[in-house]
Image 1 (cartoon, rainbow, N blue to C red):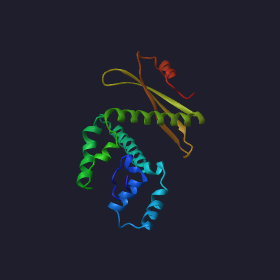
Image 2: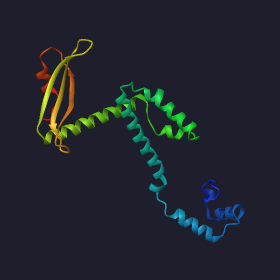
Image 3: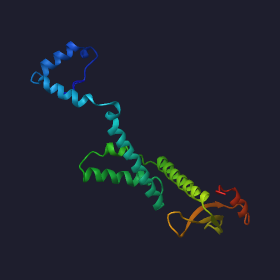
Image 4: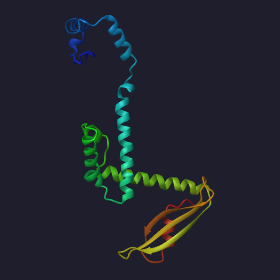
Length: 197
């Protein structure tokens, strides 16, 4: 490929004599010093530097996807809201305010139902694991509460209190909730839960 006119060459045209012919016919006004400077500019490139921008954009899209998934989880909406509302809103903002084509940006932010659900589950598992790590290293107490849902199912909810390492006060977190098959078996359900004992 010619770096000056960005013309792609076949293998046959890449022979030194053909490249020289191209330079003489198409770019006769370029001096030797110009090509030396061009060699210095492009000679230091590595494969990773050529793809760094694309990787950075994909990483930014992934981070944005996680942040938007967290917002979707916090608002308690259906996971499909990413496709139905968020993507059209991003598209409208980019095309209206920034006056750019939003296609490339939207390709790097996966917000369909399955990726959003997967990201929310990953963040929930990570939060749970962080809490379990804290509980393994400090004394804690568990509060079990049996309640019923609006459709008359028994539900066991567990809260944990522990001394947080970064503050001198007690912290309280929701640990888990599980449906109870029969009333009164909450100790069995609590033992079956993955508690950090």
